[in-house]
Length: 444
Image (cartoon, rainbow, N blue to C red; front, side):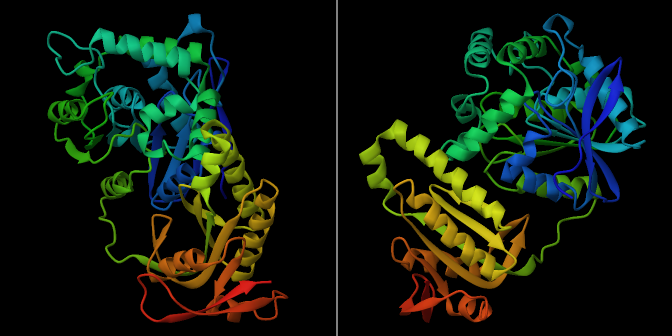
């Protein structure tokens, strides 16, 4: 059941929030960065899908460390030490009934993961480090660190822009043109901690140096690092791989900071699944019968010119809110959103058609028009993403539809016979890039 129930473990009179989900043969403890809120994470479709993917091969233990997210907040004068934060991991493992787990440290969560793995080798079955570093600040014996001037700029950014879409765009450039994802990620930052607390945590983080513990890590270790991530360059990942005995380094394409919220692909999750379970990913993808709904806004460029950039961003946010609210009401699953277009999957074609009509009617009140296309066919399912010829047909049906109309393929019309839905013939069409003619129908 997703989202899972949030539970609490007690430490020194304060509560640590955690969740347990999945039933795979391996326990996997996710050690997030300080931007985590395990409750709000499930409201972000991409993060939710990736957490659910982890649950297909492991029993996931997901938590917020002391002072952050859904755990009890702490006075700034009582900042935990790194050892305190690492101890949180043991307390959560105990509460979840786990004696030994694979540990995944995301960004600054990697510092905690390394500290815990070195101190408790009997509890760390394996270690995955993503965009992590042993030390952030430059030093005479650590030339790859960030200079003080850059760190001061980051501290100012934390203080002034924490919890804003602007800050998300800086560290997550792959979602910079997705207003709804920016809004949700910014809300998660605000739900993780305040700007003052975030600045204090980051300032404290700069003082930590984990290099001394690297030689003590005995767990099999996988280092994942983005090649073009500017905050901790690829040199940081290479350093970890060189100084942790037997560690494997995989350099990933892209510039994004976060593991779960990036739009840059699934390569990291393929690597985690293979490393944690010891089983390579199956080469043959799953195939499922699904109904796909494409919804695309009509004349969005003209709307931007008419309304202006600032007003348009507000309108676009409202538009995506209405679309996603409607999708949820009809039991759909958002697969992806690109620009002002959305791809949604349904298990029943009648629900997809009715959802499309509701979306069209809802956005009319905003002075907007959409064209929607619905098709049912066999799709390739890979990491919760859909692909294959059926998806392309659905996209082309939407592309061909008249503004303000919902068009469906003949397959959909046949499958919903007796549902009370009505259709008008729109003739046979050649769909761009697809061989043959397709009979299309408009929902009446």
